[in-house]
Image 1 (cartoon, rainbow, N blue to C red):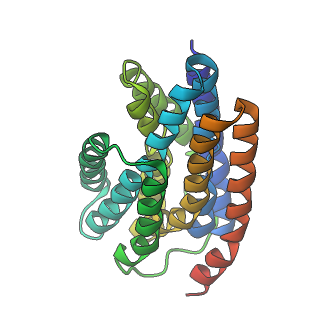
Image 2 (tube, rainbow, N blue to C red; image 1 turned 30 degrees about the horizontal axis):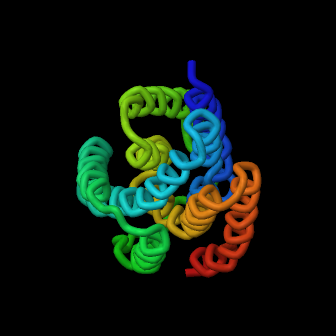
Length: 258
């Protein structure tokens, strides 16, 4: 089994478990913020660099950056449909919107800085696109809370399916599908079922500020892979992403105070 697949199979369920516990302790806003950090996509891009070379990985990182737009479209679509329909209809609609967004993004060949500017603009306006909801239920372990193993198993199954489906794709699509909304699909689906649509929508909204650090990671990595060594590129990208992640804490605090 390829190292990239092994990494995703291990990291995605582990992150799902950690974020689920964080959501039960601190609520959906913090859980969403944590889930957006490139803990899964980063090591996957690192494996691509080792196996395919820095040029391939630089192109893949640009694809991963652009995929933030598709994930934001997924989130907003799910939130709006969830206001009027159940989990199945919301998920199908969101995945359909995600697929259309990926198809559109795959036709674009924009410079990395332009792509980054588009992502920043989208991150700025996306919070206003979410529907207004009642306050979610207080954080805490929900009834029948023994679903954590099922969440982790669902994440592993989804990663396996997407990885094999993307096996024959080039660097751009490989990068885009490194950002497949595994966290959104599994976390939001289970949270919607256990804690209601308000919690699920708050979780999706909470992911938005976390994507700033993700976007910075992809930008720095793509540029650095074209100009520096692989280890330097990943070290710099993770350091910049971590700095941005902590900088968004003030934004999280303001959102929780609303």
